[in-house]
Structure formats: structure tokens, C-alpha cells
Image: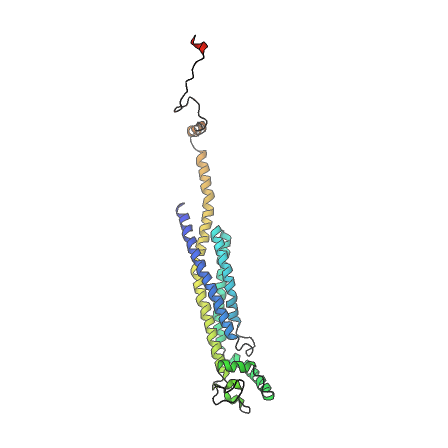
Length: 288
């Protein structure tokens, strides 16, 4: 039992180190996935009033938290700190639960589309039409940029500009930059395009958070088991020390006396076995 416990601890320490490395990879995946989703959301962030970006932002914030947990797990395993290792496991479980919540939240938001987006797009398009009918020179307006990048026109289609000329952003092949004169224009409305993109991004957020949470949960058993082994090792160490002390106390008196009476190998007497006795010449008086 005493020899098997250190071997188990050593085995599970290497497993936890491998798990921490895998955890660092998931933290990098969280940062990459959250950043790419927020960058794609920036195309129409002003139209949807900064809504529907929260799941991706929370996933991005969990990336640095995961790296902090990696450092905590390495320190706790290396220094054999049972309390710190238990805190590492508890915080990791909390992060996994948050990611499953992000998964469910993203799927619930996806089911409410395009109703939740339609109100914001309609209000924004009415404001754009009012400004476009008066000036027609705001070439860098959000709607012009969005229609050009997403290759769409109006809310439901080109008929939304029924009493106005189409803006340059609706032209699929404009003859000149920022001019509305064109032969072909986009047929799709921006509401359908924006709704499809938001749905796809929410779906990626949901599945990405779920997959990362499942991968992170693989090492929970090893971490908890190593914490238990550290506790057993701390309990068995003083027991072994007490056993050694008791064994020394109950040794026979003859053995203890022999241990105390044994001469030091350094302070050997001249007559001790194995040591030569030098003969010296007698003084002249002794010969007489």
C-alpha cells in the first residue's frame, strides 16, 4: 500500500499535466472563435443595436480565464497543494457550466430570428431612406456599406426604393464608384441575409461552446482523483513516522545498549583489532 500510493500519484500527475496542455488548447480555441464571431458581427452591429453579440463575447472572455486555470492547475500539481487543486477543479466545473449555458442561450436566440432582428432593421432603414431622399450623398452610411458587403438591397428587396433611385450599394456591377447608375442590382433583401448570417453565427457559437465544454470535462476525473490521492498521502505520512518511532522504542535493551556502546570508526583505541602497534627502542638505561 505504501509503495503503490506514490506510483499512483506520479501516474495521475502526468495525466493532469497532459490535461492542462489540452485545456490550454481549448482556451486558444475560445479566443479565436469568439474574436472571429465578433468580427463578423461588426458588419451590421449598428443596425441590430449591438444585440445578439453577447454569447460570442462571453466565449471570448472565457479564453483568458482558461489560461489562468491552466497556470493554477500546474502550480497545484507541481507543489502538491490539495486545496489549490480542488479550487482548480471547482472553477473548471463552473466554466464548463457557463459554456453549456451559452450553448442553450444561443439556440434560444436563434429560434427568435428573424422577428427580433426585423424591428431593428425596419427602424434603421426608415432613417436611412429619410436621409437618402434629402441628401443622396452619404456614401459611407452603414446601409451602403452593409448592402455592398452582404450583396443585398433594401429590407425585403429593391422594391423598398420604389419612389427613389437605387443607391450605388445596390448595384452588383457599378460603372463608377458611389454612383447609382447600373444595369444589374442585387435581388435579395438584407433582412434575409442578415438573419441567415446571425443564425449561422449563433449556431457556430452554440456548437463551439458545447464541444469545448465536453473536451474540458474529460480531465475532471483525473483532477479530482489526484486531489484525493494527495489527501491520502498526507494522512499516511505521519502514521509511518509514528510507526518508526514506536519500533525504536520497543527494541530489546541489549540491541539498544549495543547501539550505544559501539565505538566510533574514527576514535579507535590503539589496541583495537586491525591496528598495528609500533615498537619503539628502549632507552640505554633500560638495557643495563
